[in-house]
Image 1: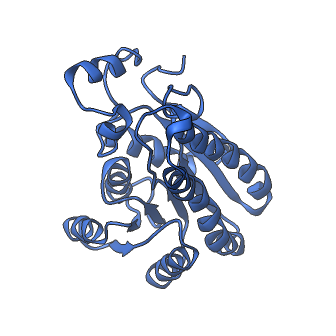
Image 2 (image 1 turned 30 degrees about the vertical axis):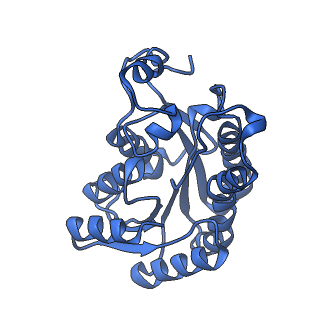
Length: 248
């Protein structure tokens, strides 16, 4: 029960890594709001997990939608202790000059602008409480980029730099900010990363991961739980690679 009496918002929490984080947080005693563009998926997971979990449909790239989510979380929980910026998208692999402008805009809106918007609407609340933990789900792509995913790589590099900058600025307010860098995992985005889900493509990706397997939602849940718990009270500004050794 490392998160007993804590409350959290997890964006993109209805599936993939976000779902793993939601499940772990709830198992460790936190009350959780699942924020997701897939409102039905969020409702389904909240219904499965029962008391202490609420769902909220949100577009993390829209200021009014994020503001409403934060207000709903504060109304439901009285305060918000933890924010996990997990919602993310990518573009299909391709030459950087061939990626459509609307794809670029979407990747930056969901992966980067969302961090700005959640900070804008939730950081004042955390400052007022004198405490808080923010976790940004970045990627090994921001540290060791794969070719043909240039604008996704760039968006995750942005998240890592934002994490460090936020950590420095908010430390004196009692708010810690960290990131985790997953490697490709068994999530709905895997096929998009690879371009096609074939045994050959999976083998190619797995060959870059020394531990020899894709990351699982449970791996992200475990790392997120530690970084957002009081056990990590001296840790801020890190981007923890949860990657089976890919970035070595």
